[in-house]
Length: 233
Image (cartoon, rainbow, N blue to C red; front, top):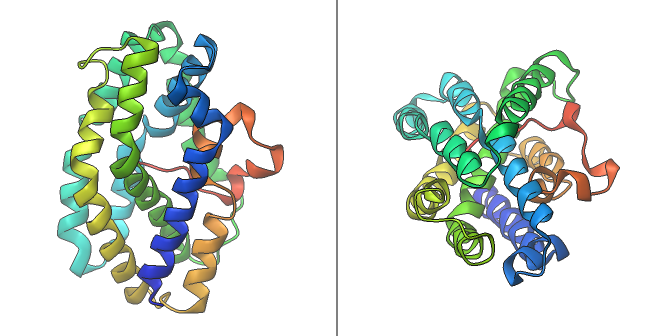
């Protein structure tokens, strides 16, 4: 099995676990409380609000063969924070935006100042790249479903849900390019063997989607920010 096949298999398993989780199923079936939808949306906004910073970081580390696609990915990401703010306001969470902005900024600060497990910047980049592509992979498959249940059970309209529907449209291509660029990155930095795969497995040791989107409802041991860079997409 190639490194790309191994990574994609890990992504698929985590997407399946997310869909099967009690939290996701309750949201999709409409049995969750209004507060659960609000917590979910707040976690999504916090998770992705500073995505451009993470994507820019990967642009800086991208090998020559992947630099053009990574730059294009960054350019397509620039308006997404605005769509996330639109989502928050449209869902009645506008008053919480300063808090969510501060939390998202603190996630970046902690990533920079807290100790990490990795030996080199190349290894840190591989872990970050893995999580970014994991979210593109997941959103390509589930963003449309999430938009549907938020419209049905939370009463949100198309303009408010644009962040979700855009990801449903564009992340199929982004995920495919991301997997290819991730493998290119690993080869370029000499991480295409067992060491690189070990970093990927460590990054995904807990379900990355559950721990970002349901922060208050996963075991405390699953939330270890010093060892797991936040994502962007």
